[in-house]
Length: 342
Ligand SMILES: *Cc1c(COP(=O)(O)O)cnc(C)c1O
Image 1: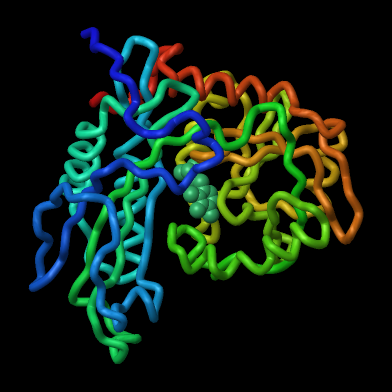
Image 2 (image 1 turned 90 degrees about the vertical axis):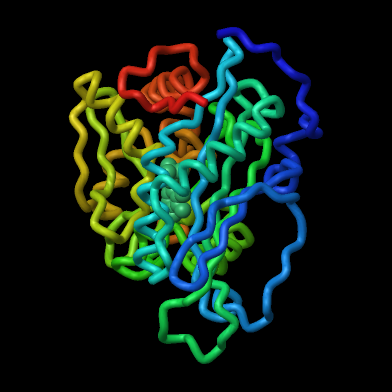
């Protein structure tokens, strides 16, 4: 099927500069009240009414997702691993005792909205970022210890450019601080970001670090918004999904691609000493929807900066990143069925 490439109606020229601030004119919205979800509806993106006592504003009953729709060179549009993102959002909602939207409802809210802005999706490597958000709306500050009886789901979409390019390497401050709790690490919730923010800002000010790598009790976990991987030309080492880290869908995709090529993939706990040993001749990288696979060029441990791969992007990191982006862009085949066609 060929489709006429429509000119994007959003201001896309300097998109990477405005990531997070440019939205499509429409969003998808659904309310939960009286024990059930209403059908999601499209409505103008803009300020919304909420009671100042709304549960989310006091007790942080909130979770979200971040995924992308891509326009391929053939003009077709797909969403990358929509089903996995829906499954994770439902798990986050469950952990937060929020009403859990059905997979069908989330699917149709996202698909309908993305379809309505189909012509505004910029060409790869730009994309349409999709941000489903679920919040507790019950106007009751006495409900701190209760599941909410009212909630709202909305989906924002925003055109985005590349977040981290493949050349720039990142500097991480390794800290023994905790990003979140043992079991809440797997929940994509604003509360985890609030808890990590002080660490991230301090690391930037004191060490010009780009991100903080959390390693509480000498357990190297992840950064504030991306998973952490150690790589070389034969092996990948990354923490196992034990509830303390976010089950990244980019992480899962990269590990799958690596396994396809007979890399040995080790998902287990490891400490700072093993990580420093690894980077003597290995690579390190961050994975996430925004970062894809972003090379780490330096780790700061106890005030000492350790270069990773001479501060440049490693071969395995670059190669895996290329393979994943080739699937996302439509340049390569999609052997695992990750592209959900629109
Ligand atoms: C969203 C997120 C990730 C990355 O997940 P992807 O599904 O790969 O985008 C990793 N860590 C944290 C803490 C996150 O919030």
